[in-house]
Image (tube, rainbow, N blue to C red; front, side, top):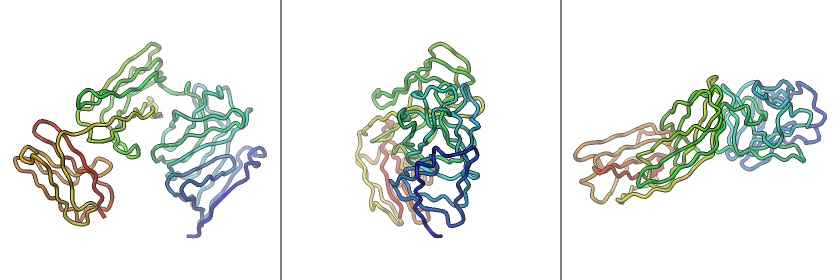
Length: 325
């Protein structure tokens, strides 16, 4: 595959017509990490290198539905692709379409519409961007204000109470809200759902919610909310981080590992469970009982990041990262 680095002049933005198009053919183009790319006003700064191959981008003045609707500039690719990094777009004042410019958020779409939080708006150059913490599947991009969200989130907090993470959030407005997914991560990139909490559906008063995570990992724990509407559109809250430490020590060797992984821990007689999870939370190995295994054969497991989770009889948990080569 031929690789090209593409830069389109920003001056093209102001000469765009409805249904303007850009096409990347079978050779496509490749973008390296940290490189700014501009495609007719749509901008990318990837944190993971990516390619756009066999894609046609259409720029349309037809807004995405909402209350209010999105701005009258929607970038749509004819097939989705994966992206992580900074996503932004330029727009014209005439395209704001009833939104309040200072309240705009970046919107991306594949199967569902996602209105982000924490976007940065430049009202002088009429440019908006958001640094997306996790990978997305992108088929369309635009901007809209939070009034189009099913939920107005007042606050989302995470505090430590002993070895428990106490999460709480407050909404001031809900319209057609369905539920909240409480999500957890150890690296703020790969997320798993801890629980789904039913939303109020319709409310114009303050509503409070909470969730307790009783088994946080040793080290960094990241939490966020996924706020999901009845039509399955969704948005994310800010990310909260908590640090937890364990009361017992353990080590893994070798790390990275090719075949057999050995576990060494103090007070091994009180360890009742050993699990091996991949970064998506899928369990590849589990040993429980009076004498759980202190060795894991990883020879036939895929290469990548894994987590060894050890649990003591008193409920204490220690989680250590291991790389499988």
